[in-house]
Image (cartoon, rainbow, N blue to C red; front, side, top):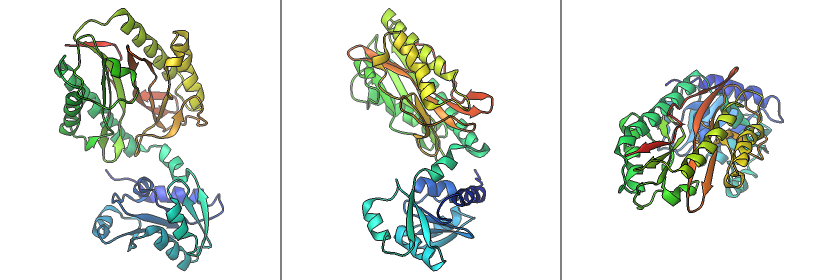
Length: 358
């Protein structure tokens, strides 16, 4: 997949003209990848008004030359100081740095170098929010792979399998279907463990009548998918399980109806939370409604009770309300959506019913 790195760097330069400095040193490796395509583990990108320079060490010089086309590649093991020295030599009086990506030790090395440091937050992250056609194609493919992997897994699930066995089977299937890797540690939570929102798979054996929550994704060329479904294994769902699932399904539907440009993350969360509160489960919904998805599994915008973000066209985000009852079990339903001018499109397509397996 070819990305418009020149266009991304141009948009960054335009954004920098609005601030106190027209030069920026990018050290967050995800942001470096977004802007120039470099995927190594050591690199810093210096964006000047008339040039862009990637600094990396000798392990990655050949790789960087093959992955990038719009930047100069230079040898610079300590990119944070090498980048600032280069900015100084090229006449920059001030350099924007990424506040969240620079630790105290790096900052101590950077301060004496020369240019004035201007810490800023979220500049490249805001550019990354708006997915272009190529990014959307990769996200759509990642969603298709995890959907197909879960569909392939469903007939194999039966009482007696451990959570870990189920997770490993799903992870292997993701790769067999063309994913580069799982998008994150796969969550398989059975029985009482399903009441733990981010449970790590254990050697617990799934039992007949268990709720089984699976939260998983696929990674495709750096882009993530994310979906969650809850099942019942080896028995018909009980009335309590059906009621819990119905409440979460109503919350998810209410939230989905709000997803459009202009809706705030808090408003979307409020819609889901109101449904769960109406069902007497407001205190069993301990997390936010969702998050953006892209080169990171969690990125802007954030949807939740304290969110200050507003949904915009070309965002890709999740809707994932849940309710968790200790000792009984939990339900979460999650889908990934592409936001359009008119509303949204679900990129994940699994049925949202409470399905019996085995």
